[in-house]
Image (cartoon, rainbow, N blue to C red; front, side, top):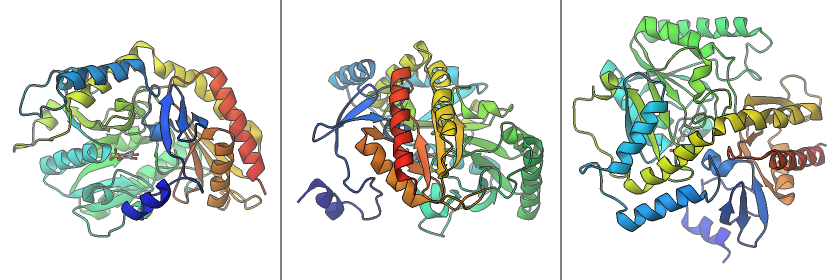
Length: 426
Ligand code: PLP
């Protein structure tokens, strides 16, 4: 039996796997990965936005190996130096006043903890979220995920309301100026809140929707929302699982484009460079409000904390946010300049770029073309390039390479991507 057949036999059938002939990744180095047959690929998806700095970054490898040689796990019942040092570093760069940090093993659990904090503090299970959002795979996080293709149950521990504002290309407000778009979304928000009966605990949003296809409202939208939320006593949770740590180039956190400061921030993915690491940041007044014991067996484990700390230090010492800002525009402009009839929209910031593929001649917005996205992925693979896919219709290419991407690698990846798009154009 092939590894694919063994995978299908023993793992759940609903696990999505890329490519007609799926790839077994064997090793990585820098921005490249190799499959088990020795083929090399430039990784334009950064794992799944997890490889933030580089594959096999020596600093992270050494920190993990050193820590593994001392103690792998100790739990929060004991003092844990790597966890405290990581939390201190995260609090320092968080931009949140009087910040405290709770570490978790994933983004799902980070959002779970944020929902727990907000709903217990406000004594309400009503949550407001954006349409087309994705916040995780647990019972509570799928209950607030707007993209129903990721929500296999309609049972829910929350009463969730959804508002517009997560995307522009397929929005009913498309074509409006930024100011008008924001005003329309704020009016929608107010109407939904009026209908909710005034008992919403928190609003959760990704500044740029990740799984949703790297979509967002205009800068300033979440800031305009924040004024309404503050007026109504609703907490704002910024889900930075994909947008944090400088990926967008212009800011260290996605929320910083809003002009306002969220109450809680959740993170995961890139902080660990692939190690299982996530968490919640909140002011002490919110973080310490939980009136019960709470614990995570694996959150902030010494092993993952040591690796994440080395990763974060590398990211800061080498100002990788600036590199994301420097590399992103060439990719963005190259994709826009292609002028292909299958490219309906190119969007995003820094090294977080989405390309929405549509059926030619179907207007604006064009009909979603998931089959063209699949063909482009296959064409990129043949050219030694890995990119991601996403969006409500599975028709958006997601480009999110490690933030150490060089100018030559950006040009090489762009050329392969453009050739694959042209090849897949009917
Ligand atoms: N939030 C966002 C924005 C995500 O993109 C994801 C995962 O893709 C999650 C939360 C869940 O994170 P995890 O898969 O680490 O549980």
